[in-house]
Length: 200
Image 1 (tube, rainbow, N blue to C red):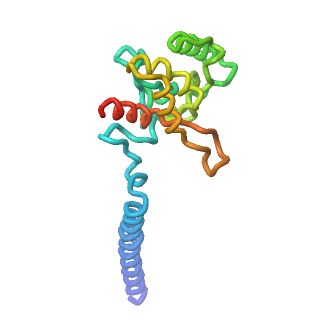
Image 2: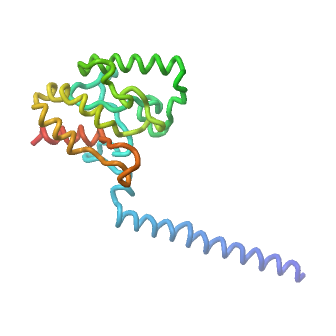
Image 3: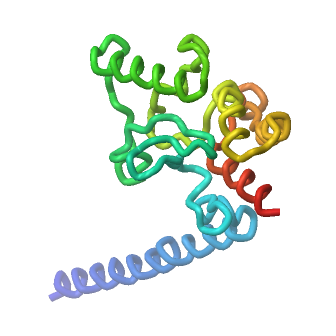
C-alpha cells in the first residue's frame, strides 16, 4: 500500500516538474530570448530581410532570365550548387575535388562565358566568379568580380562608369572583426541600390 502511494507521489512530482520546466524553459525562455532579439537586433532576428520583400541579405540570388542568361543590367552572383540555385532548403557545395573532371570543365565553361560577357581575357576572371561557395548560398562576391562587371552594368543602364564604380565602392563590406576573410560586396543589396538610384 505504501509502495503504491510512493509511486503515485513520485509520478505526481515528475508530472508537476515537467509542466513547470516546460513553461519556464520551453515557453518563458523562448519568449525572453525572442523579445531581446527583436529589441536589440530586429533585422537579424527576422532573417535580415531586404527592402520590399526582395529576399534575405544572407542568401544569394540569381539575376538571370528564364533561360538562365545573365541580365546585363544587374551584377551577377557566384554560381550556386544549392538545388536549382540558391535554394535555402538544399544548401550545399558540389563536393567535387579540385581535380574532378566535371568541376574543371564547369570552371572552364564559366570562365569562358564570363570573359566573353565582360569583354576581358579569361585570366582576368576572379576565382569566386566561377566557383560556388561551400554553402551554395553565399550572397557576396569579391570586390574584383564586382569591379569587373562595372562597364557592362553601366552600359546596360546608360550610366557613367565612374558613377557605378562609386556605388560599388560604397557597398564594400570589410573583413569580419577587421582581419577575418576578405572584403566583399553583397550582390542583392548592390543591385537594389542600383534600382533605387535609377528610380530617383
